[in-house]
Length: 420
Image (cartoon, one colour):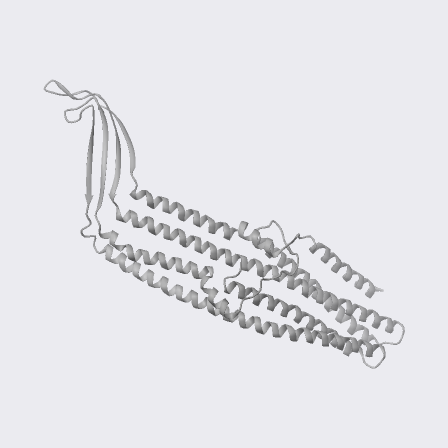
């Protein structure tokens, strides 16, 4: 009686776990990726970096555009300043002017603007790579839920089989036909499956929460169904597509920016020339300052000696350009290696999946035969429990092999620049 109560309690807990985890709303893979790219903090920060780079372009462009400044001053003296009976500075003075400065030769400002534009393009390329990585992480989380559900299905089937065997062994023992050893073995196998099922529900909850975080949801999300991944390309096509992957493009963008820094080193050696125009108002006028007037200036600044600063900057830029070139070569080499690895993993995963599916069929046939032999008295339940464990393990291997095959296809699509 006590054992039956424990059995009913365990079944109730599993049912409660299933109903509790049915709460997260289901979502498709495309929708999950779309939500992640639109609302995930990583994607949002990447877009903010683009806006920041655009603001820096505007700041750099201001260095070679005209500026207009207004100035006003009021001065109170203790008394008039008088020279030969003439007031040369009144006790109350008011002065105002407008200054218009126009850069005529501002090579350094020009190149700074070009470099800021390069940095903006690099920010866009980096944002695209962030989006690729985010989409890949979201897809992996989605597939993890699919796999966990398949494992739960296999464990549930194993639990139901173990429960049926336990009930049969218990009935035999209660009827004086079976042994207590058979009953204990059967119950042990059933309780093991119950424990594995509870652990599986916890793993599913973790996977659903992970998907919810990536998709910027306020709670967990569930995978709607196994997603149909795009058709994988041939190896040659995948290798050629690796050069267009977002991380390679980002590295190439940074290399172009570094090369432009080296190319534009000439701007450090040019003079700076700007013109200034200033209308003014002075009340009261002085001997040297009329009531109103204007003045214009051309100001030329020629860099002659700066302690070797420009030569140091030039060396630094060349070193940065060399580093960027090496980074591009490494990124392209890594991308092609990722393609070859994913392609080989996919091929081997398909072989492993076919073998696991065949093994699962055979273990279930062995389980059916063991059950039949036990019920006919031709075998003990030791053979049955061994067959149950083998069948459960084989089903788990099928679920894991299916996941490996899906992940390998996802890796190949990502490595060849076809996902997202």
